[in-house]
Image (cartoon, rainbow, N blue to C red; front, side, top):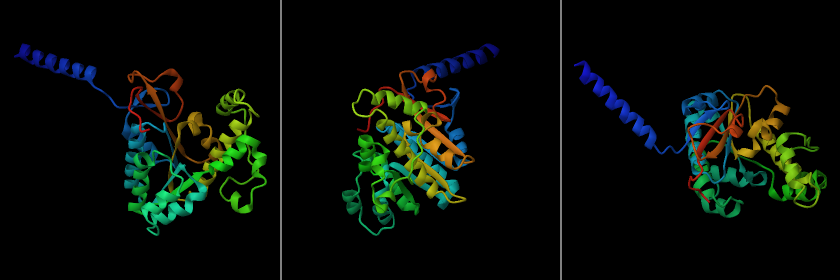
Length: 290
């Protein structure tokens, strides 16, 4: 009887080991120290945050699927206190977005007139439609690209000549920019090889970060919870949007999520540790949305 029991346990162990070796995991979650974690831990932390910054890789399908999953799960507890927002929508398109969510204009009118990203239909439309179905606000947080382009060409001084109406769509001037932050320093080095004033590249990035933080705070009333979708580089290492949010409200409870692509998902690569509160790894050969 004992031998039979031992053989059953041994067979079960062998089966579990073989299953682990042959499993094709689509993603794995790690905490900032690089220790394996679970979705439920991420969800619990998100439920307790004032602002969730979901840093995506723009063409990663797992990122977009988990954005929708997390948003749906947050809605179960936050209900109508949940506010959605995204880098992918520019502030001067807020009226179009609001009118569409309210059913005042057709889907075709919205999609034809808004300057949507080319992967909108597969990656961001599900989030917009979720907001529409559940009567949730969706905030266009990004600076209009024409103004970011103006900063890239002529520095932040280019914003001073904008009309009062135009300035409604950017962070209030003057903009405080700390070019010593490591993320901006890296962009400064890239800018040195791009021609023109090398400082303008990180300044254009900072204007985007500051504007997104501005519109997040503007739409974060007491008792509300804000989930924001942005490229991971806008919130990695607790810089970018995080730095501007904390500058305005140091007590704000912010949860950051980032993505990394690795060949091996068994452990987090050293360079990806401390990118965010949670880092989600997907295989390097994961298919792309565009």
